[in-house]
Length: 273
Image (cartoon, rainbow, N blue to C red):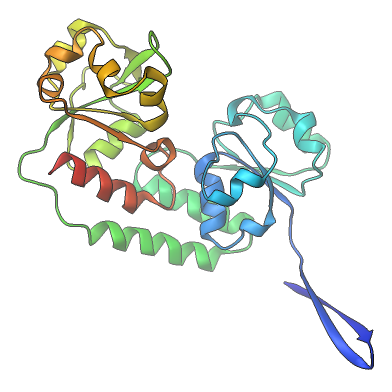
């Protein structure tokens, strides 16, 4: 909705148009991406630490990691609306925002194409951009359907979540990593459990991965691919012997935001050279 104010200026009528709408704080990288993809990035006055895309987010105030936000920090920025991941918290902080008169709309999380499009529709509804959200959801589904198919040999992929040496965890089923590997035409090399467990040399050898997949920030925290492959067990896997370490930007790989077709295409290219 546009509000127009008429101003007399040197005998001419000048028009000053201001975009009316909520001042928004986003808590979750995929939510932030979605707001921008819907053309509403100008509404965002602050983001959480996981929101590193698009580039415009770098200039905005940060309110901490979305799972550990401070109500005082958010309220000090005078938002009209908070769009929060369903994993955002802690719950008392969100309740404090709501009690202060700032609506907190929880946006559904999850992984997969359906979760991505549901998130887009939820953000679109919150910002009165439902029509644009439907268009964006349809575009994502069409882009995914148009991607070249993966190769005939689905490679076994071990996803390692790293935050420095000594903090290596491996993805089982039911995770964002598991889903993106599947969408890209790979096979998660670990299917004996759900969620994440610490990496052991025994589990790495049992998994027999052909690729080791990790995030860019995780690989940097370890000191690079050579350091990752020096981890006990990994060097003796098929992936380790072939030096097959793949990395992708954290949010692109695991965020399941509007760039999902790009993420699937990139990983598919890596896994099917």
